[in-house]
Image 1: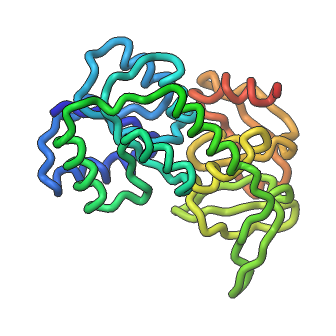
Image 2: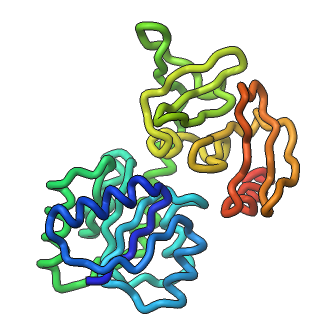
Length: 250
């Protein structure tokens, strides 16, 4: 069984491989891809695998953009941190999904369903639009619960200049304070307004209005000057540079 993993977090990709071995799934790993752009190129150059494991949020955008650029006629098991409302679209179309963090029994059940199925779970373009619409509908979050001393407080999303991850802890920074956010970067970014917030790399999400200056950086990247940087450097990853510039022009 030949599989392809499309996942931008190396730890998650490694964990998935270990779990596949644990449940006795006999497979040959063809490649691990972390961007929409590279995934499109891979499908254009290679014979389709038997099964694809695909994360929703990749290094340069949503994996659904892949289906808007090429036809993918391969069964797909999605991994996602999106809420249950968005996930309903997967169920309607019999597209398997694994909610992050992936659980061993859920992976085993998804593989059993795949093995017993005699037809490919291809993506219906109409349902894709429905799914994207449901996701966009959730991205109007106004507040966020953060840790403050021994308790919690809610702060306004519009007060947060940027979010970043350090030692597996997510932080939100305002003009005068840093808060701990009890969410992963994936979960957090999925809930934000993507017209106002951009994930410049795996570990940083910035608010558009916090950007003070944009400068060229080596290896075709750009460096940002951000309000209240707190010893952080803000480098837009190479894969996202063009998309970031387009986002800034919106």
